[in-house]
Image 1 (spheres, rainbow, N blue to C red):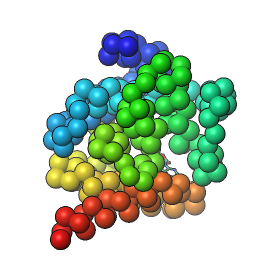
Image 2 (image 1 turned 30 degrees about the vertical axis):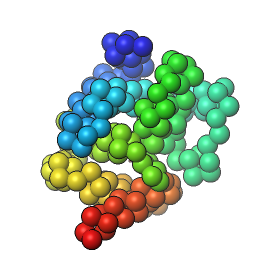
Image 3 (image 1 turned 180 degrees about the vertical axis):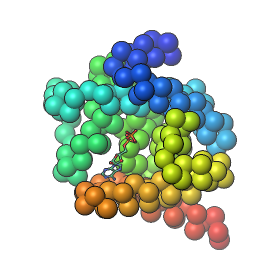
Image 4 (image 1 turned 45 degrees about the vertical axis):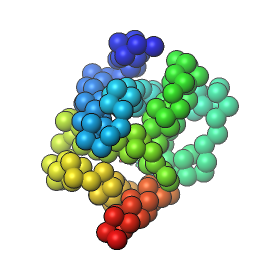
Length: 192
Ligand SMILES: Nc1ncnc2c1ncn2[C@@H]1O[C@H](COP(=O)(O)OP(=O)(O)O)[C@@H](O)[C@H]1O
C-alpha cells in the first residue's frame, strides 16, 4: 500500500481530531527517527497508522481480535485503553495486508510500551506523548527531554502515565514497567 492509500484507510476510521493527531505523531516520529537513526519513512507510516482503530467501539475491536484468533493477556483485557493498539496492529496485518513486522509491533505496543523495545517502537512510543497536538501540562518539558534522550523521555512518559493510572486506582499493565526498567538500565550502562 502507498502512504496515500494508508492515509485514506486511517482518515475514514477516525474523527478529524484523531486524524490530525495521527498526522502530528507521524511528523514527530520522523523528527525522532532522524535524530536517533531509525528509518524516517517507516516511522512516518507507523505514526500515521498507530491509532487506526482508536475510534472503533470496544466491542468491535474485541470482535476483530476474535476474528483473527488473537488472544489478549489478563492485564491487556483489564485495560480497555490498550485494546486499540492490539486490535489496530492485527487489523493492519490481517485486514490491510501490511506485513512489516517492525511497524506492526511498534503499533501494537505504542500505548503501553514493552520489554526490549526496538528503536522504532521507542520512537513511536515517545512521539505519541509529544506530538504537536498534545497540550497537557509538562509536554514542553517532555519535548525538550526527548530531544536529548529517548530513554529519559520513556522514563518520564511512563512515570506520568503510571501516576495518573494509580491516582485513579486503575490497573497498570506491567509492559510499561518493563519499558521503564529497560530505559533505566540503558541509562545506567551509559553512565559507566
Ligand atoms: N501500562 C498501562 N496500563 C494501563 N493503561 C495504560 C498503560 N499505559 C497507558 N495506558 C492507558 O492508555 C492511555 C494512553 O493511551 P493513548 O493511546 O496514548 O491515548 P490518547 O492518544 O487518547 O492519549 C493512558 O492514559 C492510560 O489510560
